[in-house]
Length: 391
Image 1 (cartoon, rainbow, N blue to C red):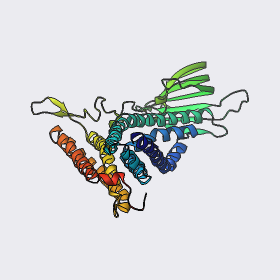
Image 2: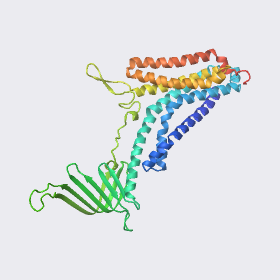
Image 3: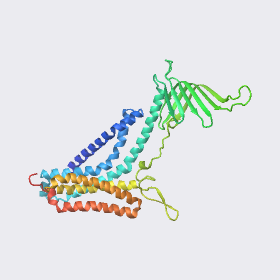
Image 4: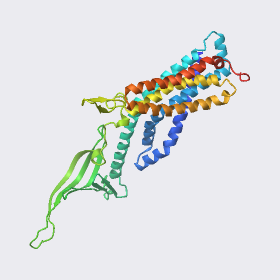
């Protein structure tokens, strides 16, 4: 009985999980494609971003697919008289709810694995991938202006890359202008140049030919003489035939904050959902408490064993006349309602401290498991024996 239901439930759970993931990817595909095209990305960038976004839906989908997989596995085995045969071979029906609890426990662990580790890491990697894509696009536009003069304003600098007039030169002219806060300015120009990189540290090397740099400062206009009222110029000029200089992506686009944000921190990481933010005590010392995000993560995790128990109860209810049509949609509605309600309750309770949080979590588990397993105990025969006319 256990092997029969396990194989059937696993196939159904995986199939529904892939289906929900496919729907989610299809829903975000258009907006993600627009974002990648706007940043000048390629097909591999689109696939990478979609892959990094895909874990977001897993912890939400797990209770639903557990309910569907176990419910369909039990009801199909019952309607095919397979459970009756197992019962005739002296296999107790209690193996069914026990198997459901095994699946629920596995779902609990997977939910925490995704919401507490995989999803935050994927969100962090997604943000850095978008930054690298912007940097690569900017460098590519400047390095390969084709027949168009490229002008980009980045962090107060004006970059102008022109196509080459010389067939022997790989690149054209590069012009950079940067004004200073005190009236100073820097103008740089190179007649032939190329960019190599990036390396593992996202650093580039630019090789410049016929490089010229002019640094100046607007002077004060004389009050007397032939040049009265005409501002003067104090400047220095640098001419170099060939040079190399290193720069990072942070030098040409907005600097990315590589420290994980609140939603990108793993469960047990410092300042993560479990340890939370520091709270001052009455004596002036600091204590930490979990964040609301931890309460919502735990709510979805404990919903997995509850959904597994509800699947057994729904299978028993489907053996009745009314339950034949109401068990599946009613069970799904209860799972969705439990997701919304438990996240709201535990999200608020965790802010109030452990004294109220853990009793609320235990109460939710008890209110979900006890009625479901109690009903399955009372209707054990309907779990195993198919309804009349359905065998």
